[in-house]
Image (cartoon, rainbow, N blue to C red; front, side, top):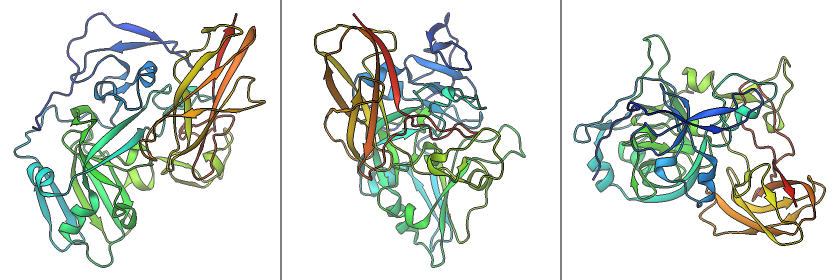
Length: 391
């Protein structure tokens, strides 16, 4: 049964901390257990809630538990409870028939679909940007993978009937700006993308209802695209007959129109375009920098990878700082938009070791050696390095 829940943190006890060394600091972050439906999370901000997944969670399985799934909101005015009996999803604009759908009509009245997909903040890993840029100083935990359940957006649009001349579909949720003249958070997709059969309206993740902080009761799922498009608490869909000119589509979440969204600090005259498709990433999850390994015996190295907008083709591991690479063994394929586990055995000799991991996706795109730089700290996917001591 769909129910409502509270969103805000309760009175916390004495805060625990975690070492999270970032180039620009701070070196420690608070671990909070104060948010309903959430376990221990790294606290970035209280209002609006920004909660990062502790990285050890990603070593426990390919799907990120709901109570550990990261949280990111733009505006602080978020409902603390939702009446599921009166909630409605509206569909309007350039359509034959405007709709006002109840949750029951959506859950029981439309074909159900399920899809595994990574949800990743555009600014995931921003905290490693050098020189530092403004924005939430995330480490690598502003991402998660879930099995989303819901209905195809296409089925909802077909029920309304899209009129000839429609070009885009815009989405908005229940969150509101704190001041009246600030732009409401809205995002849009081209009509063809919105109707591709993969974009969905989810009401459950990992077999359970959405946590309120992750978008209850409905959220848009845009597989392979960054989470700025995954509108939470979705309650408004508008079909447009002209390109979307709203602030969050036209002016926000822009990246350099360059290979890898890369530019030089202070560089001027760079054309900017909206960030859209995710790029491949991979991580070592069972080892941390400084952790000891035993020399002359087999040591297991494992982690996760995802291909962004395409599936994982290969994950390679280097134990010599990227001079040579060896293939890893891939785990079960949960779908092209999902995390995929990988593992390898290494037999190192005594000394300092730089372990590096690289994902190549089915489109042939591989991770670059180093992170890009842009003023927003977006789309980082440089090869991760874990430095260990072998004795």
